[in-house]
Image 1 (cartoon, rainbow, N blue to C red):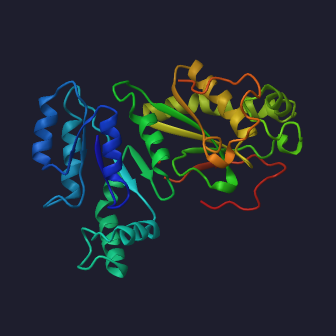
Image 2 (image 1 turned 120 degrees about the vertical axis):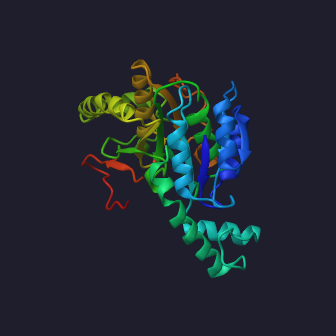
Length: 321
């Protein structure tokens, strides 16, 4: 694993998380030394941080290294690119009072912004070819760790890994999503006082949603779309795919559909990780959630997201990429 990206975007954190998963990690080794170590082989996977701090760093050299390693039998190098919004990076550098490695002197204000812009331009070709682009702008460390574990925990297993995620639209689109399905056209259990404190994993909530006449046609069309689509993504070399299911509260409709989709994909032989974003946040934990019913299994196994938003009630008034 080659880990690169913008300074302050979390490369060091990603390396530490990979180390926890059993990778042998090294930060900013000379590329010639790294290539020699990788070619020597061994049973322990290697994760290396490579960025603009390396003396004589050239984007073309990193891309050439990846090309050479891909020609070696038994080696499947992957490139992880960490990024974040400029405002977030500026705040992080301000809080730590660290100097940006490409800033033209000084450590704060416009000079840091200049360094961020220079680094982004320098690394842009690597972002274009990265196997995984991870945006940490509003990603807490526990959520970053979850993403890293989902994607790289079974790094020795071939094939594409699929992450299924439920979320609430008002709390923001998941930045890691490749495909987003908007479920706000389905009937909402929130307006039933008896169902409001429960979740989509509860049988009563599931029955309520599935009674909607639009549910079965949508489910059939969604799975008919995804079943042939996923093998094509895998055939093109995509290593990770995140399918996000959104509703208003991220607690009922999206949770049910995410559970169902994860089970459906697992039956189809895909490696699947299931996460309910809002249920893992403290404000989403309700005292009635525990023991609400017989829950389904918790686990059944980068660029702008493609938004699939069926028309219907509760449709969003606007949508921005």
